[in-house]
View 1 (tube, rainbow, N blue to C red):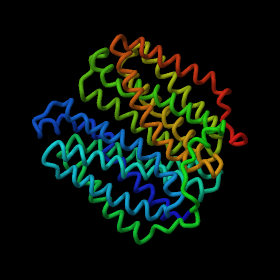
View 2 (cartoon, helix red, strand yellow):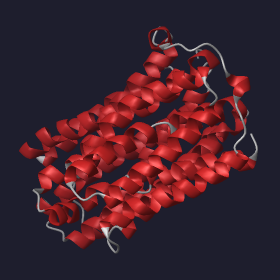
View 3 (tube, rainbow, N blue to C red):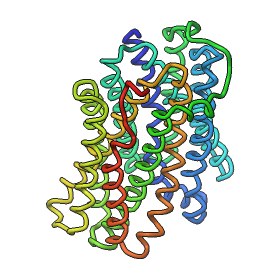
View 4 (tube, rainbow, N blue to C red):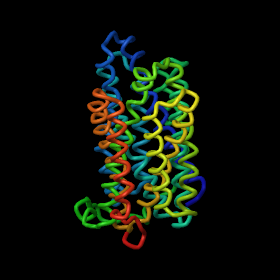
Length: 376
């Protein structure tokens, strides 16, 4: 794969992710502009996540039969228009529609990026490419989150809309055809789940995503109600997880090539388990920042290792694996956030204990999953 081609997919990931983290932060401003309840305006989050998770399941099989270049040109163009529609919306219904369309067309980027890395990058270099690819999404997401505190909420949608159209022009000129990868169209999910390595990896991805989001989505509430911290301090602590996540994606991908995918996944889960234990101890504020840094590193080490592992699966399973990676993470994330809310309402200590035990069990069951290339 040419560097320019890989660079285009990294830029696509950046455009896609610019307002992902910022969307939740924009809810109060949007509700004020449209004179609506924040709970109504808050639908912009799941109206993006749900169609994204479902649509992602189609793009892997789709590019088996259609040139990925054509699919991406159509999707990035429509995704950019959907962002512009969101930025120009004059009522909440239009904004909801725009977010739904953003999820449908934006879901193409991550699966296709993983598929092309797996097919056109040698196995000993895939980890670092996966790390750079996802690292670019973390950088863009953090930038969007930062800017959301200073500029009007409409610009958070207009910026990726304009940049997406500019990127589309470059893609039209420089993105090569991938017709040599084509084959018959089919949905191979039932066949894929018969492969033991495939099944085990996605069971793991589902469980770890439930655990991560069950904790991550409620850290702000924990810092506010249990540690009595102000909004600025809370925002800075959460931002630290994103900053360390950027480093974690780059480094985790590199280490996945050097130490092995399994070792990086294991390091990630150990780091997450350590953070949950430290949160139970209610350490002073001076150490909370360090805990959040380790938490971000643990999650992204795990993410980079697992994503690289998926690229090592047999070519016949690759398209389904890439699509399911996005679909399962989004669906499990929603379930984890809901489950975490139910438990944390009773007691944050109980929640940390429950999810900590789940992390320890997952670490103990690591041999059962048998993550190795030979079985795949």
